[in-house]
Each structure stands twice: as structure tokens, then as C-alpha cells.
Image 1: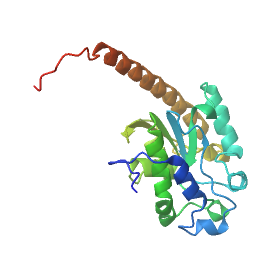
Image 2: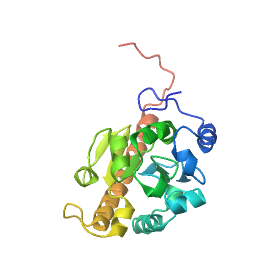
Image 3: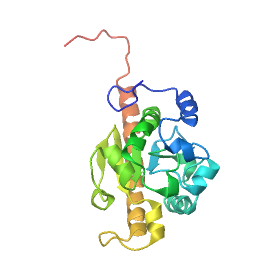
Length: 221
């Protein structure tokens, strides 16, 4: 079954989740405590994608529950959102040992699960947190420092790349940019993009009412 952006099938997301929870497709299964599937609302219009689970996520079975997740929650609160209004997932669903970067074959093994989440949600806005999520969604080799600060149209959504919250916790600057300031600025763009998507849907609804079929037979040309 293909869940990719081209000719995607809208999946039975509960069945895909059950498959993921028992997955042994790559070496990450050997060291995990549990699969980290998602948190928040998979029927929301906003999707955050991170890299992979860390120690706390592996322990609790939920993404972004450690310090980086707490920071993300605080920053979401600053724009009037919380996890009930978004879904949070990772590129890989099992913790890489020692919190190392996921390897290319591990990302490919896990690809069907993220593709299924994308196909199920069909979100208006996707926020990619860090290099791996950004490269996955944009389908190009690009670093987050260069990618962030602009919007992209991919998979029928507005994609807004930003730094992973863990980068802000580490401190320092990336290309002269303070990560936490960048995340705040990018989340303001997220808020704007959500508002624009909501207005567009309202407009489509009004147009549908205005063009309601009253029984006339329409011409072919």
C-alpha cells in the first residue's frame, strides 16, 4: 500500500498504528522500549514533525515529552495553541541509540508510517522541526538554517521549517540566528498560515452555497 503524496490512499490510521507498534523493519526496534507513534490530534489542520524519540519519549511512548517538548508547549501557548489543536509526530518512531541521528535506511523503513499520517491528516500547515523533517518533506538536501524563514507549498499544505526546540535548549547561534527567536518568528507565520487556510475554507463554503444545484441541466461546454 502506498501512502505517498502522489495518488495517495487515505489509510485506516488505526490499522497503520497497530502495524507500527509491532514494527521490526530496522535495527532501531532492537533497542527501543516502545514505539512512539504520535501525540495531539491526528484530525487537526496543523502537523509538527520532529526527528526521532529521545530518552523520555521512548519511556513514555509519546513524542516531545522531555525538555524540548515542554519548550514547544510553551511556545505554542504564546500563539494561543496547544497539543489538542495539532498533531506531533517524528520522522522515525523508535529512539536511535544514544540519541544519534537516524540513518537513511532507518528513515526509509519508517517512511510508510509518516506517509500514512500525512495522508490521513491532509493538514493545512506542516511545521518541520530541524534538518531531517525538513529534508523529508521538502524532498531535498537543505539545512534548516537556509530553509527556514520562508514558506513552501508541498503535499497540498503550507510548509514552515524551523529549528528543533532542542537546538534552542543547547544555546548558541546558527548562522547568526538565535534559535528560540527564530522559532517564535516562525510560529507567528504558522498562526498566519492557519488563519489564511481557515478563511480560504470559509470562502469555498460560501462559493459552494452560491453555486448550489437547483435542478437545471448543465451543458457540457
